[in-house]
Image (cartoon, rainbow, N blue to C red; front, side, top):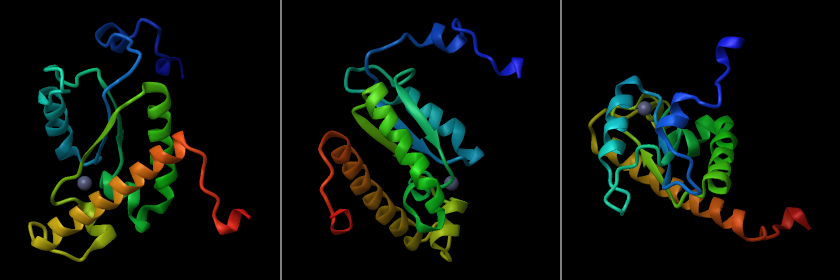
Length: 155
Ligand SMILES: [Zn+2]
């Protein structure tokens, strides 16, 4: 267990200065093919101040990215993702969520298949998933900063 201990002067602290707020949370897939492209994308993406996002985002990786956060097939993961988003909102004061879904995603096929990789159906599934994710993310922020609206089951 001693090998898991990270001292206060860890490499991450030396490279990434502590900030009061960070730009974004990034949600991407666990697919090994996506790790390098995602890292490169974030290193090249500008944050609106002509700087890249290195050391300026929190990150969650789950199978399917947005698929894992909204698909009924992966319902048991939802609380984990949305809980992490709430923590990042509170602790990192992020101002955006960047979701990186990808084509030929096995998790998307498991949740919404069958469909052919590269087909219009695959693209449409990701569009619907991302729209659903966006609405849930808005609701997540809304719930965080405003009192919850009572539903009939609460009365
Ligand atoms: Zn994937």
